[in-house]
Image (cartoon, rainbow, N blue to C red; front, side):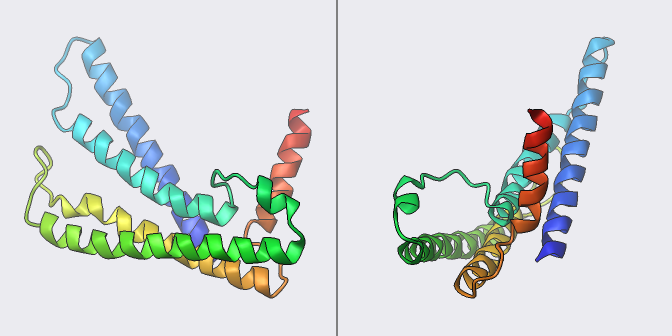
Length: 169
């Protein structure tokens, strides 16, 4: 799981770096009075989609998804576990439908090409099943660790986040 998280994190860094370079080139070209690249806006749009969909599994791994846990904190630990299990099961169901639907979408979109890049549009939609599969793996691991009383996936990140908070103060 840690390896998958690291691979996704490296991919995210590379995608954001690519976005920064393309945007810098586009701004530079406009500033010096030259015509900007025709493909830059399309590349930025599709890279942004990949960043969003690859960011979801990393947020699931680190348990950084936005949530309202007011009720869960008031419950005893056993009931809190049951509620967390129900939440994870619902998330897995949603991810299943997302992954299933995205595979159909990819098949259809492989016939259509991007306007300026001349690549199949299905390449953009490949981020959706990767997001669904990665998130589902991390959620299943979280569920297993929770019910076997082992530290959570984000336990190794919790220490570094605590140190960052202490340094900020």
